[in-house]
View 1: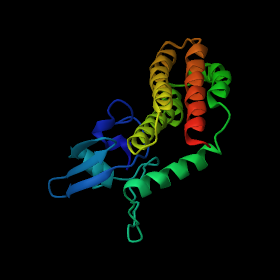
View 2: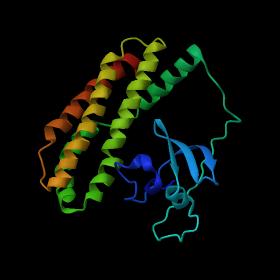
View 3: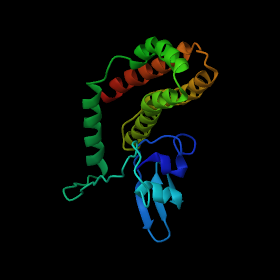
View 4: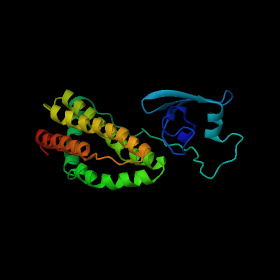
Length: 218
């Protein structure tokens, strides 16, 4: 759906930008013009003008209108795995992914960031929001999920993943911190030297990946 009409995006896109985002709809009440939905990790509700805006009730579609659309997950062929079987399968998949691991991506990011900040200073604030959403927010979320996955593997019997868990969480924390620091760059229109923070991410990434290769034997 169009985040422009989702009140829970007040800090980013609500009533500001027409961007698509995925929600899980729980309840639609057309007569009351009310909709209940899950977005990210929480339940929310919207009503009135936001309901009309999402579904274009009595409104003319603007040029930048994003119509809602549905994605279906068909579970008819789902095979459920449990216990040791699920753990072993997940471990095999993790080993396979490790074989395709890139060289340290944070090193390339450290080299690129100064020129990106120059453009951030020159562009409107929307460039900052697009930049951190497509990069740092995804980075922070994915490494946090990677840490959760390794914790799950460890509970299932894979010993001593703490170094990798801590490393991935450090990458996630630093990504979140950089989002805030870049917000100040975008507002002040003055670039900052953030190389040390990015290199910290690189060190945490390398530490976590090296340990993971040893522990999973990839």
